[in-house]
Every structure is written in structure tokens, then in C-alpha cells.
Length: 401
Image 1: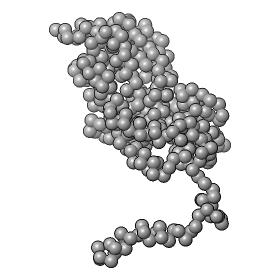
Image 2: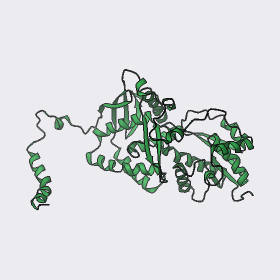
Image 3: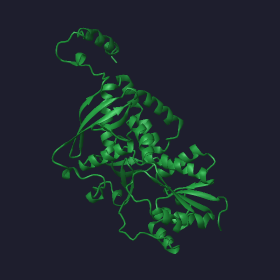
Image 4: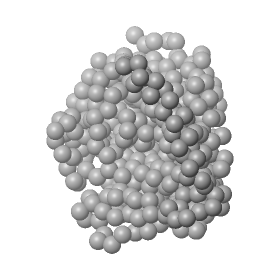
């Protein structure tokens, strides 16, 4: 018996097995019209064939939107301005893509006068939270259909059987023994053979980078210019955000930069093992830190750094459109107004080393920092500074505590 509470649904659609089955499942279970939406975030796949595939599967239409520049400019760069890193290592490549996909999905739902949205995220992962928090933040009355939390199709085999039953084309290719997700910031791998945290990832799994052992035997030097905390030029050539990140992915990948293998804590409570390639993001993170080191006041830098774990958790857990993330972003962006300068980096066999930094309004003063004789700093002043700051320590020692 079909459910009658939904008339039209917008589905986040990739054209893979899961979402292809979901199109037909929504039609069969809800008797509703299905509109598909695919976002081009630089995943490097040909999206044009999805037009025909979506309609042949039962969708009334499909939107394929090029969101690459918006993704990097309005989502990746604000996050990089905050130096966001989850649990010390993860540069949040998948996490930051979800709020943009969901935002565009809600926009299309409004345009299509749809009363529901749907996604293919499972009930075990983080993506269901990220999608749905954004849905509700942008359209509180929207109905959300999460098939993985409703249907009885609990395995790949059952999905394939369902597809065969309804004549849904399933690609006849060798199945990857893991799942992957790619955009301009990174590519992630998880599940399958990676579920054993002791097993080393196979070399043929990697897409964006060569192994450090196979990287060139000579280092590559690059320079990145920043304005107000954002990278704007590579080796003196101004580029759009998406183009700059794509080129850094190419250069970084060639030098074996940006591989991460970690066990992380999912928001839903379990630990999971993820392997990531983030060549361009790794370079930009190091370069941004370098320019900040000579342009940010010490106390401002330390306050901002104290907020990195909280900011990163908000992105990871799906709270991009929350008042607390927006508040933190304002503080971060205020701190970045003077972060303008250039970083020089040396890329060599997986290493990304800062070897130079300069800025027109640098706070680094050779006159004060020199170990040679100077006329601007009276070293005798340090005696009183130390005595005042040691006062509480001396009193504590005198009381025998």
C-alpha cells in the first residue's frame, strides 16, 4: 500500500546503485513524483549521462548543477581560514560538501514546489545528520525521506536484486572493496577492506596522489599569495578559488602530498577508519599558517587556535548553518583581515615544508628579534618581567604547597 503524504520529492542523486534504486523505491512506496539533483563539486566524473539514466529509472527530471566555485569560495575557504582540522588530522573534505549539496537541494525543492527531499545516506553514518540538519535549518517544514532507515533492503545483494526486478541498469564493473567520495577538496575511502584498522591501504586504491616513494627525486617549490586569509594566486598567477585548488591538487598529488589514514569518532557514536587524500588542502593549510605566523597578533592567534576543535566539530557533525558556527566564523574572519602575504613551500616525497614567508605589514621585526646588539630592546627589563610573573609561584613554594 502506497503512502500518500508526499506528492513530489527532490532526491540527492549520484547515479550509483543506491540512489538509482531509491528513485524507483520512492515511486513504488510513496507514489510520488521524483526529481533528481546532482552536484558537480569537482568529483572528476562525467555527469552528463545521469540525465538519461535518471529519467529512464523513473525520475521526471534531473538538475545537474556546477557548484565548484561556490564550494571552494563559500565553504572550503571559510573553513581553511579557521584552520579547521578534526581530531588533529582530518581536513573535513566530505563534511564540508554536505551543507552545500543540501542547500542546493532545498533551493530546487522550492523551485519545484516539492514537499519532500531524500538522500542515500545510511543510518549508521554522519552524512544523514549533515544533510538533514541543513534541510531543517533552511526549510523547517520540509519532509525528509531516508530510505536506508525505512526499507528492508539491507545489503548490496538485495539492492541488486531490486534493481533487476525493476530493470534498473546496474554497471557491470568489478566492485571496489571499499566506498569512496570525491570532490575538489579531497577523496575519501572507507568500509570494506579498510574496516580492519591494522591493514595497510592498498597502493592501487589512491587516486589523487602518487606514493611518496614514487614521487620525483627533486623538490618542487611553490609560492602562494594570500589576501585577508584567502589564497588568491599561485606562483604569481591569480586564479579563481576552484582553479587554484585544482592546480594545487595536481602539484601536491604529483609529490605524494596529503595522504591521511586515521580512526575517527563519528557523531553517531561509533569509531570508523577513514583514508583520505587532500593534496591541495594540505598545502593551503600549511601556507595559511605560515602567513598567519607573521601577520597575526599572538593573543589573537592563540584565541583563534583554541576555537579550532569546536569549529571543526561543528563542521564534522553537520552544524554549518547553526548560530554558533556563524558566530565563530565572524570571529575568525575578523582575525583574518590582516592576513595578507606570501608563503613559499617545498614539496618533496610526501613532505610539505614552509621555507619562506613574507608580508608587507609583517609583525616580525628583525630589530627586536635579533640576537645581535640592538637599540630598541633593554634586556634588563626582562628581570622585572620575570619576577612579577614568578610571584605566585614563589608564594606557593613559601607556603609549602
